[in-house]
Image 1: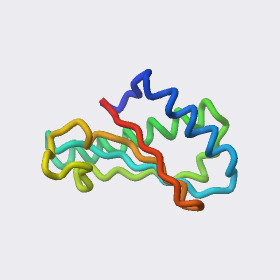
Image 2 (image 1 turned 30 degrees about the vertical axis):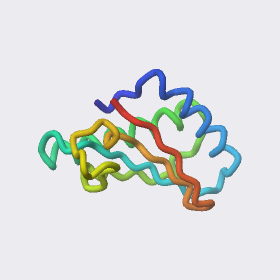
Image 3 (image 1 turned 180 degrees about the vertical axis):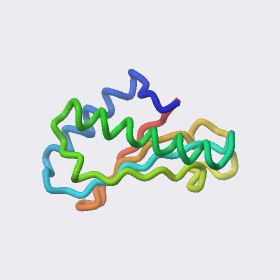
Length: 108
């Protein structure tokens, strides 16, 4: 699913508070999936996941979309390659390219 789980919103609030301290930062939001389903489906899903996180951040925390790049990787970059269908592979990562800090949230 690309819908944000309610329990992840507190994580995103903390991430947003951090990002607000760096208004001129370049941020990349990357979506990932497990290997269940086709490559095309997972590519689209990963893009929608990343876009949903960006939308939540920009709608709720006055973060400027122009500072963000959204990328979907599908199942190209599995967190656990030994278990390609594992839920840990379904995630969105946010990287502040300016300071190199990474935040991650698992998706359903």
